[in-house]
Image (tube, rainbow, N blue to C red; front, side):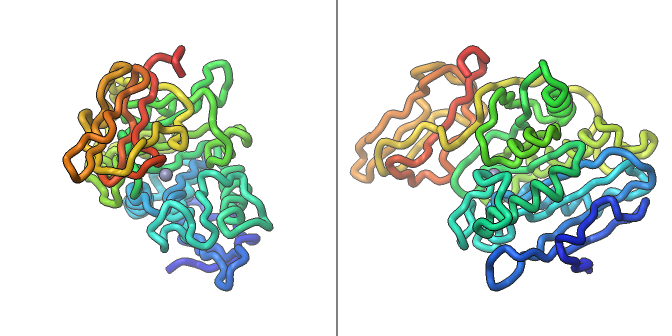
Length: 340
Ligand SMILES: [Zn+2]
């Protein structure tokens, strides 16, 4: 059972060493019912770093939620150094709606950080996440996937800036995470949890996975194993115990790196309403001009030959074949930094 407290009274540092706690943080977000934000905390037997893991910033993405619930169940405080703070559902409004945006205000939470304490419901939740969680963390992991609208490569994204401490830490953590496709972002569009983290000088990673509102076992396992690798990388697991919960080993995988800002809002869009049949699979390398797929009409006609506009890796395809003119259709991330 969760302990209910007013969000103003929440203090991550008040947890007793060597304990787990489940909280429900009550916050006025300008709706008839207050927000009841679930927070799970594992407080290690020894002091150490604070890792914040967010799931459900988009309420139709479920892989991260499973990861967080499994972590809370499986990891014992005596094995942990530091604090693991887990938010299993950062955006309850959009989760309840089963939608990427919150039905109450139409807002995409990943566009409103750092939020506003007097703004719309989504802006208020983002404000609490920024000030009460991200600001307190030594590292942030934000778990995403394709959700309803997109099919996305399983990858880990990080801040690519070797000239700064936060960049070096983000990169090292990405390389330790164990997913072999790394998305190196030199710039971050505003409004994200990760742009909040950057502003607060908190190193970060985020993940993507296939999505589609169905959890693929391989993706869930990649996130779970990655979280353990990340904790080990951050020195948060006692070494003699660190293999017990997960089969993840510390072996470095061969990685592929892609570039660009990773903003799906900037994807290539469909030029016609129709039925899309892809010619390539996610994560495949394509050359400029290569066919990505075709949009068909039900009269059998080919309405649009969809081609790559640059060399790179296909990181996003439509989540459903029924596509609409003007909506995001695919994204190729450049594999060469000079084209980013
Ligand atoms: Zn997302």
